[in-house]
Image (cartoon, rainbow, N blue to C red):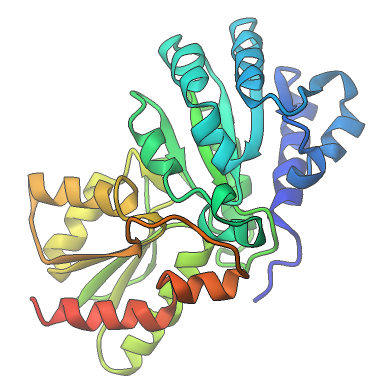
Length: 313
């Protein structure tokens, strides 16, 4: 089912709702308010929206200062800049300083599409997972975005959110509740677990799980929306109950969701595992549909990997 509204619109509208109740909420952009959708926030709260220009590192410095003065700042920019260009400032000025900066990186992975390889962040989650105490999450639809964004706003400490800007299919019913660090179970099964995050991979995983179910193979499907801290108990339960785990992510298999799950398994309950994701490659120009096929983020590839994994049980 289509989402009906772009994710960036839900992002901005949710921030407006929070700001109406809490004067501490402020927004910062690096000349991308139209792209992120926060121009409507600026219209509603002109004195609480700051466009710093094409100066992403400076934006984080300003956000840190606002946080130190008691505000809850939401800086945002393309994920490639949020991770690579601002990493030092976000690490030191925000996280090391124990502040409360809520950074958003838009257009994660292949959703950068025609902006090409230079703007295609396949490594942002991996970088952010290395920052001590940082919470890293990725909503999968508009309902989870609104819920997780509000959770993040009042979560103590800094957060990093990956945000698909465009319209995505609806997964969750209105009113569904979410908790950072707690995975959502979308399907139950006993033969195999698929753990995915983000709209692109969750939708394809749902398609793959439906096909497997028609073949008599039942899948436990998890939305691991919080990659750090990943839901340790849910991963261990998947290993114990199904005996095999496949992770699916719109990111390098190095350092992201697959790594987070593997780290939990190897220390607690090792089982056969495979990872679907970007295989140590740079991005490239193309439509999202082409890129999904190019990098194996499709239901068809998830099915191939699942069938191979089941042979190892």
